[in-house]
Amino acid sequence: MSSDTPQTAEAHITEEETRLQKVQDLRAAGYEPYGYTYDNKNPIGDVVSTYEALGPEAHSEDVVSIAGRIMAKRGHGKAIFGNIRDISGSVQVYATINTLGEDTYAHLLSLDVGDIVGITGKPFRSKRGELTIAIATITLLTKAIHPLPEKYHGLQNKEMRYRRRYVDLIANPEVRDVFKTRSTVLHQIRNMLHDQDFMEVETPVLNTVYGGASARPFTTHHNELEQDLFLRISLELPLKRLLVGGFERIFEIGHVFRNEGISFKHNPEYTLMEIYQAYADYHDMMRLTETMIAGLVHRIHGRYDIVYQGQALDFTPPFKRLTLGDALQEHAGVSITDSDEVLLKKALSLGLEIHQEPLRGELINFIYDKAVESHLIQPVFILDYPWETSPLAKRKRDDKNLVERFELIINKMEVANAFSELNDPIEQHARLMEQEKARESGWDEAHVMDEDFVLALKYGMPPAAGLGIGIDRVVMLLTDQASIRDVLFFPHMRDSHVQ
Image 1 (tube, rainbow, N blue to C red):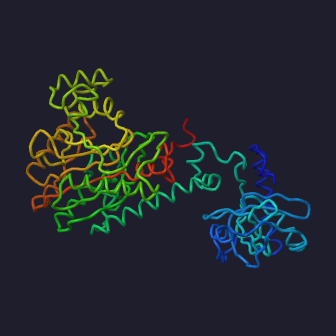
Image 2: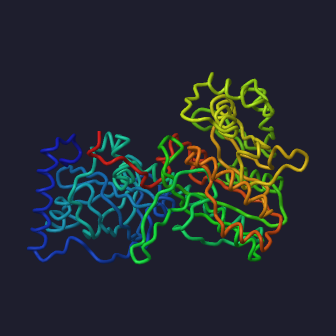
Image 3: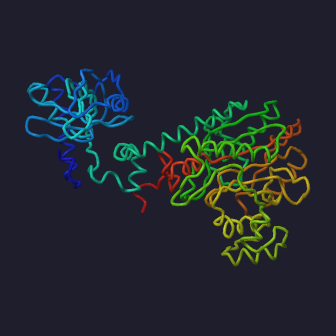
């Protein structure tokens, strides 16, 4: 096959033209190269497992019906071998001119790597010990016009793999396993929460006021309403309104959008899960989080200890608890109660660039990001943050300078964020007003005022705890993927013409 050898751009064009001619020839002969349906009643993976015990050179009289993509094809005189792959696996196929007849054999020879076919035939074990299907009938279901990447190297270019994920999934079947695991993770999370009487809900993606997080939004416009709208940056405020309305255990898994930088752990669009439970606090959410994360690790890997990017991680519950104050003291040599001057000096020594007078919360966050997080490898809950950094969280019961908040850090990466929810409308309004002042001073990622949310709190929201988990980062850990782009089917990419 020409597509089994390296291709130049000119050769690709020539092969594509050749395949287009085959389409025309097939239609001229009265054959439609793009079929409608096929009874592939035997997934290839099931065929492989069913006939695993077939002995050397043994033949079965069973007739199987499979469908999939031709991934390899090689002729040997009047016999031909190939490999067919579907979502469940791959199997070798075999035919001779004597068994198929000249016309069908010629049709088989004309097929290309990449074509999708339906095949019926009998399983047997080849002389080399490989399970093989002896082709009885073959039906072209889809003619592939563009050749696949050269088979011995596959599609290795990272950028091309992200841009043409459909080819990546064909050329690198192990990538499919990553996304199968992602589906399993979502399924298991939903099962765990449903078993604890949480109800899944959906809230709007488009909002007139964006809130619930410190982030810059994407802005759009509704022509009929003549109104600017924002893609949501969080799920939090609509879900809290539902707590006001009487729902006590709710969760949502949905996409959020943040107009921020791109990195190995950031994509402008990503999947976030938020959970809210009435009459609970952040200690309850810690227990729920470690049960969920440890349970997922055990469900996927069958154990609690795994290796992620060469680093051994132990998810045996309970996870370690460490206050933010202790973490700062241990790794940065500053106290959470230090003066703004001391914190600023430390931040400057770590490379902070000052464009306007930084807020205390910004200084603490910067020091934590630069000097602390990189030391946190094993799963650990970092607890109790300054109130200035968490305007939606409830003050700590025994220290009003802190809030009852935690982040779960795994291998230097934040995976979850949670707190006891602030339900005092007066304090909430005051906190959001402080955020508005911060915005006016130049911090464009500060929270915005949402008067309707404050009004909702005035009707009374029960004591509650909330939890946010980055689904993509969880999948990264569970599938040993170094970048968030490797767990998103279609990550955002810069326009290809931009250098």
